[in-house]
Length: 204
Image (cartoon, rainbow, N blue to C red; front, top):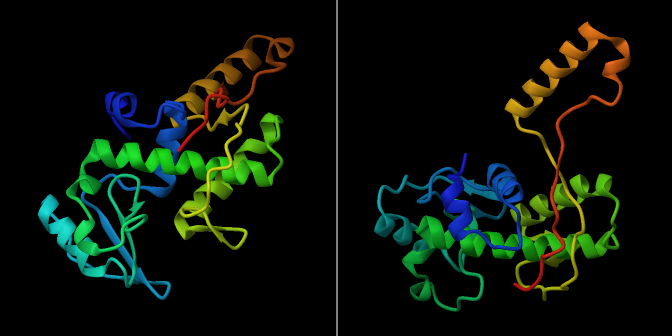
């Protein structure tokens, strides 16, 4: 789980903390020095970096000839960079990686949401989020590169965050307690929900 202070300080302000945490859980890494390399769709085994210099050496070794992802968000190294030598150690700085990664993911979310017609229906957002995570992992959505694509702008108006294990446990306990007390009190009790406003999404 990401540190709440790190999310508050470093993540893109257009994304609510719950979205940032779910994004990193689904598509990122717990290790800020993590480097993943894929070539022709196959995962290439690389040494585990124990320093920023080691991580950047691996990144520069493969950048330009393989798909290289780095850091907490598994940010696509090389996006907007012409030469491997131009890749900077900030990519493996936890705060900067989170800042860049969440800003890019917010754009990917807007691209996917636009394809769906920017629906206001709360129930559609889980599918948008899932597709955005898949697009982040593959780098493509509907045959186009999401990292190089222009930001469509717009907004995603609502989001129902997936409940945490703790929230689900509390909800289940609440439901059991309600059922024990009175059948009438059990109506309307379900899994915990948190509604998050994404209307502030905008910009890259």
